[in-house]
Image (tube, one colour):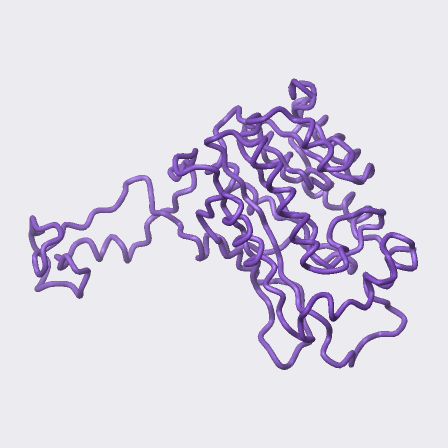
Length: 350
């Protein structure tokens, strides 16, 4: 695949690694994606990601995937990866519904993974109830392979999936990692700045010590000092707004409501921020696990080009249908998209 122009604003159906290998080197401006989480869902097709026998194998697949992403990404490109974590085992199997087998057991019965997958405690090397820390392991492995991790953003989810646990706190966040190939890369902070709060305007009326201590004396003229100990430092606010930070109400975004089989879908508000900050207008955004194409819809409507990849034809067909509507000059109906998605995603395996 020497030229990607024929695939702009479309979803390609097939094996993600094989398709990526056909992409030209340094051809993608930005990658925004959320790989299937380990052991959390059975998407109903053989060879799917996330049902590897051990988390070690899952991480190896992710790192091999990131090696290929490194090749196709432009030198100044950015990569945004959303990953959730999981807990190993269930402690004592109490509270389990015998009529609702685990994702792994269902996948074994359907022939999508080997029987050894369902009972692999020794291979994983973790005690039951232990948090696997997959996002952290993933990020460290990426650093070892030459990536620069610029942010581990906390996506706070005030209405996350309910949990019935009584011996730990409920999980209310996931991670979004911002990775780059080099120190100099595209990042438009001004595009995502937040308005300053009134309290910030009040604070800059006071003189402050260079050490950032308490307000000095009273309101009056600002000192001329910069960084010398005990001198006064002038505080000014960027007129375009403040840097939102990596964990704040800027990233506190509710999940989209779904069916009982699917509590949440990728939120368009969440995707918008990496698109605006991490890719210039006209640039190509890639989502190698694009699903129904929510990232693509947002990217196209924000003036970027998009290429998606997914292993399931139903998802690709739905994504391409929505991209086609945008090409015709119609605004994507996200409510309709989510309704269609409910009919496809996370169907109970036979």
